[in-house]
Image 1 (tube, rainbow, N blue to C red):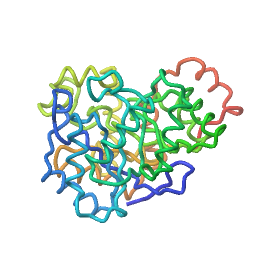
Image 2: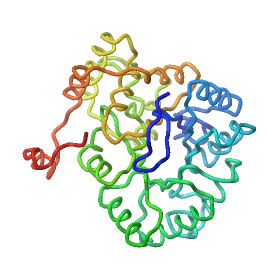
Image 3: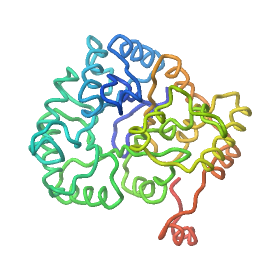
Image 4: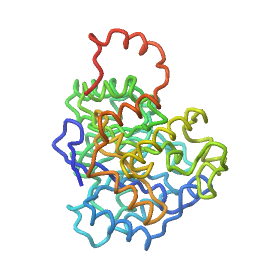
Length: 344
């Protein structure tokens, strides 16, 4: 397994990490992802560790805390310093007025509860699951800095921030000498390249490593969704709730990308998901790609995305097939590439 630095930190993470959104299967939304139980989760952790993948990503809202609890059971008895545990909080977790957001009150409670569910004394990477505009960024950052100094968190990150959200937070951390965000968990795939317009240049400039979520485009790049064919029965897109909550993709754009993936998969002898994941692993600022799996077969297939590289010609073929028009001001900036070079 290839290891990479998490942004400008000295912390090394595997190129692939395992997401636990499939653990638990509570509620219609997460049931559409999967319903991995403790025994199955323990087996998946075994397979990952055998392959050199030792980073496991969760969140408090995944199956109402069940995903964290199942992960905690699955890693029980293993040397803690051989594992990298990341989790997230911000979204509503309870009915009370303060059981949501990034206030000092909610973050302290959320971290303590996550530690209990995970059965650990510390979280290697704690990420805000989304931006909360209510509390000042100073309240958020000072709270997280306190949790780092208390030894409950090792590294800090965010998820689903816009460019100005992230830059404002980084500037405040620098101004006050608080612990900086070193990771941004962001959506990025061959059918969702918005990340490249502003967040990628920001990450390169500020030394923020990107943790990619839904690298297969919300289950669209499995190779099972084809032009003129019905959705497979196991697809999360069969759930209207899951479909509506995820990124939307124009069908013709999807089919154009899948056609290109098909061609490259035949050239390389790899599967469509492996090609889609490998494309991401060669993109700038990417520290780790979070993969999910309903079963051992899917997990082993995803693990086959590392240990080889697409050729420059194959990368270019996928770039061309997945390109979409840039919004303003990015199309204007692209006309002056000699003054606004893309990240490398």
